[in-house]
Image (tube, rainbow, N blue to C red; front, side, top):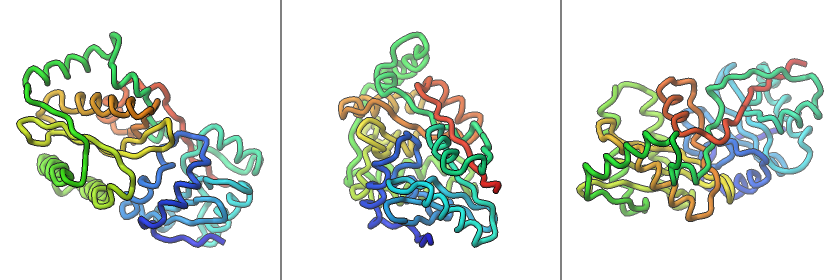
Length: 297
């Protein structure tokens, strides 16, 4: 039987231990993803034997994560099926990559159907590509950065620390004011951002700021998924600051390269046209296909 609870900061060690056994660069396989967004997505987590299992949603719109960890995979999946049936809902497992699809089919032959939505795919980039921006395909990005540096001669980059987090929060607050402040999505994202900043050091996050005239005009932060892959959770800059997104992206990628990361997962585009265009413009090395497995026995 699965015993679910709201994730809290004290869960980080056992969750990260379970995720260390994942064999996919899925952005969901970081503690921060579950913890930061638990209010927005009604997320609860369970520690079943040596597995992490996540459930999110409400009423009949509920999905589960794959069991991530080690042990009897079939037994852990069966626990998900039983839990869903106890609520009278159809068991649905989100974020199934090809390798885990194979495992599901081996454990439950022909019991799942798979639903594909390309808005759920992860964009994974070579860190070296983002840091160096070599070649014709990055010509536009290099121009944006060149123009930014010409127009802002006093720009500088610095690491996010507890001493400058307030500057990032002010930047994000101003970013929201430039949008429709009544949009609930911005509020939910901001709550996730604040949760991350409140526990920044404990969560092991890493991020950076771009300043112009000593004022923060762009920030980004995220966390390691593994020794080789980093997940970027948030990136913000004012739309009117030409080249701000391009330069924070490149400068942060340079620091990731120095730390030995080979890949950076910049999460999904959620089917949003503008976000998709922006993510595709950086030419991902991997577009990680993820499906929804629906139990149909």
